[in-house]
Length: 522
Image (cartoon, rainbow, N blue to C red):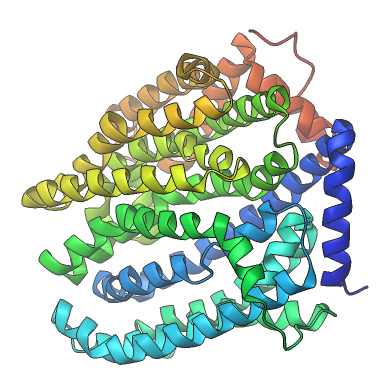
C-alpha cells in the first residue's frame, strides 16, 4: 500500500510523544530502524562497489580525476542546497503543512538556481584547472541540483518517522539502475560521462519512485515565517555544512589544481575505499541516532546511555575494519581495482588511520544537532577547515604522501579532542569516560592489525592477490572475534543482544557466532 507523507507526518509527531513516555517502544523502533538503515547501506555499498570495480577496470585514473575536479565545486553546492531545512524537519517536534510546502518550494527554487549558476560557471571551472573538457562536464553534473531538490521533504519525513524499510527498497532500486547505467555507458565508450550518467540515474530513480508511491503533493503556498522558524536551526547547520565540506575536500582541490587529474584520481580512489566501511557504519547510525536523540532531548541519563553504547559499538566494528584495510591495502587495491591503481596503496594505508578517528568523533554531530546547538557545530567546522587547509597546503610540497600525512596528523593532534570535548559537555560526560568506551575495541583491534601487517609482508608477500586477501581477511576476523569474546567486551555483548532480538537470530550461523557469553566486562 503506498504510504502517505501526510500520514508519515502524523505518525512521526504521534510517535515522538509516545516515545518520550515509553522507552521500551523507543528501543524497539531504534533497533528496527538500525536494521533497515544498515541493510540499506550495506546492500547499496555492495552494489556500488561491484559497479565501481567494473568501472575502475574500464576507466583510467585521469577520467576519475576529471570528475573529481568538477565534484569539488558541485559537491560544495550540494552540501548547501537544502540549507539545513531537511535536518530542521527531523529535529522539529511540531510540524505543519506550511512548513513542508514552504521548504519544498524554496528547495526547488534553489535547485534550479544552482543548476543555472553552474552552467554559467562551467567555462571558469575549465580555466581554473586548465582542462577544456570540464566545461561540458560541469554542465552535465549541474542537472543533479534540480532533481535532488524534489525529494528533500519526502526524505526528511521518512527519516523522522524512522521508516527506513521504505528507504531500503528505494535505495536498492536506485543503486542497481545507476550501476547498470554507468556500466552500459562505459562499455559504449562514454568515458568519464559514464560516471556522470551513473550519478544522474540514481537521483532520477529516487525521485520517480518517491513521487509514484507518495500521495502527498505540495500546494502552491509559501510562508516565509515558516522558513524562518526552521532556519533558526538550519541556518547554522548550513554554515557548518559549508565549512566542513571544504575541510574534507580542500585536499582534492589542491591536488587537482597543483598536481593534476591523474593524481587526483589516485587519491580520490583511495579516499573512497577508506570511506566505504566508514560510511557503512557511521552514516547508518547517524541517520537513526539523530532523530532518536532529538526525541529524548532533555533526558540526560537516557541520552548518555544511548550515546555511550552507540560509540562503543561503532568502535567495535570500525576499528578492526580500518586497521584490516590498512594492513591489507596492497592485495585489496589489486583485487578490487586492478594493478593500474597500485599508486593508491600508500595513500589508503595512511587515510585508514584518519578514518578510524573520524568514525568516532564524527558522532559528536548527533549531540549538537539533537540539542539544537548547530551554532557550536558551525564554529567547530570553521576551526576544522582552517586546520586542514593549513595542513594540506604544507603537505602538498611532498606530493600525495605529504597530503595524506597532513590529514592524519591534523585529525589526531588538532581536531578530535576539541570536537569531543565540546560535545561531551552537553551530556555532562568527560572525555576519559568516552575514551574508556572505545579503549576495549582498540585493544582488540590493534594486535589484529599488527599481525596482518606482519604476515602480509613476510608470509604472504609472494602469493597472488586474491587468495592472499581472502586468507588474511579470514585470519584477521577470527583473531579479532576471539579477542573480543575472550575479554567479553561490553560492546560485543550488547551487539550480541541486539542481533539476537532481530530476525537474523533465526540463522544457525548467526546463533553460533553470537552464542551465549558471560556477563560483559566493565
